[in-house]
Length: 395
Image 1 (cartoon, one colour):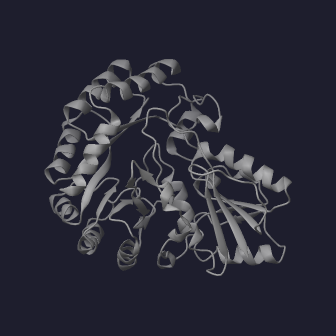
Image 2 (cartoon, rainbow, N blue to C red):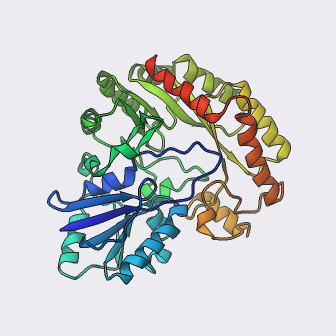
Image 3 (cartoon, rainbow, N blue to C red):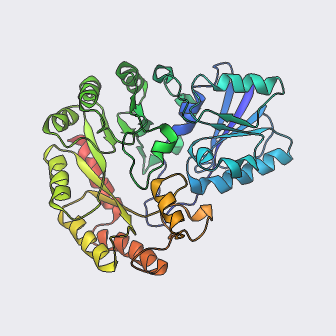
C-alpha cells in the first residue's frame, strides 16, 4: 500500500526572511502509519506537487488556517481524478465542517494508535466520513520517534546552513492564552512525554540543532529540570518557547545547550526588561514575539513598544497582528462583539487585519504593523540579526 502525504503551500509574510523548517506534523503523523506502508511526502512549500495517481490514498496535513484553502484545492483535484482523500492536522481540527466538503474523510485528534484502523477501513472500502478523537488522547507513551526519513533535507537549509529539526517533549498546555488554540487542540492538561523517549529521539537525529516546539516548557519546574539534565549530555543546541523564570531552571537550561527562546513581549514593563536580561545573563538569546492590535494599544503605544524592544536589545523580533483563529479565546470574544470582519482564511496568517481594532481603523493597524517591522530592523536587517544569532552556536 502507498500513501501520498501532502503538506500544502501557504502565503508567506513579505516582512520575514523566508526559510523553511522540516514540518513537524507530517513526520509525527507518519510514525503512526504501519512500517510496511510506503509514504511519499510532498512539501509544496519547497517542491512542486505533481498530480500523479500512483498511490492508493491521498493524505493532506494542514497546520495553518491560511494553509487550508490550498489544501482544499488539492483535494478537489485529486477527487476528480478518482482518488480518496483524508485530511488531518491542526487546521483540520479548527475547520472540520469546511474541510468535510472537500474530503472523503477527516481525522480529528491525535493519530497515535488510531490510524492503523483507518487504513483497515480504507482497505475494506469502509472509510468513515469522520474519525473524531478530539479530547480523547492516546497514552503519552504511544508517542514514538517521528518518521523523519520521509523528508528530503536538501530542502531545509538557509544559505547553506541546515535548519533546526523539530521535536516535542510534551503535549497539552495548562495556560489558556487569549490568542492560542492549544487548549482546544491538545487539552488544558500538561502531558509530558517520557523523558527517556525524548532523549532517545534527539540522539537519533543527525542534527546538532533543535527547535523544541512545545507551547511552553514552563509548566512543571521539576519536569523541566529533569528534561534539561537528561539532554545536556547530548551536547546539542536548541531553541524553544518560554523557559521558567527561575535561576535554577535557567542554569540547567544553559548547561543543556539552550540557544534562544521565543518570548512573548506584551508590554514595556520592568518585568519584561528583566526577563530578557536574565536570559541574556545565562547566554540565551531572545526572539520577541509581539502581537499588535490588542485593545490596550493605539498608534503611540505601538511606537513606544518598538522603541522599548530596541532598548532592551532583543536579538530578533517577530511582529504579528492579533488574529482570531477559530476556537481561540479571542475568537469567541471578538465574535461576540461583532468585530470579526470576514472569514477569508487566506488572510488569517497573522499579517493582515481581519478584525476591528478598538483604538484605530483596520488600515491604521496594518500600517503600524509595517512600521514595527521597518523600524525595528531599520539599522540592522533581519538577516544580519539572524546571522548573529547563529554565531551564538559557536559560543
